[in-house]
Amino acid sequence: MSRRYDHQDQSIEARAYRRVKRKMGFFIHAFVFLCVNGGLFVLNNIMGGGNWHVFPLWGWGLGLAIHGAVTFLSLSGDGLREQMMQAEIERLRRRA
Image (cartoon, rainbow, N blue to C red; front, side, top):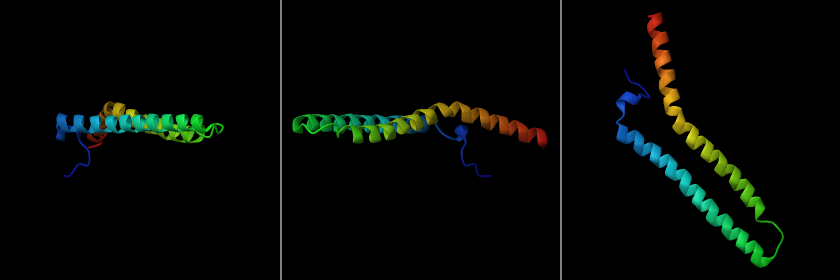
């Protein structure tokens, strides 16, 4: 019987690698966000042209916030997923 997702079948190192990869993806996204938006702020002040730099800041900032929420909620969801799996297994065993 093939199972799509089972924590017991995965090594701790493989799970840790995936978790670190998710975190690093978010941190790289945040670093690029800071660099680019900092550069746009400096460019805006050098050119003296209003506050146009806030439009990419807010749009990208919303995307970064969503990326962060999805990343860290998915990482904290490991325990929840385990609890739900155990509850479903118990329900199925009681029915059988």
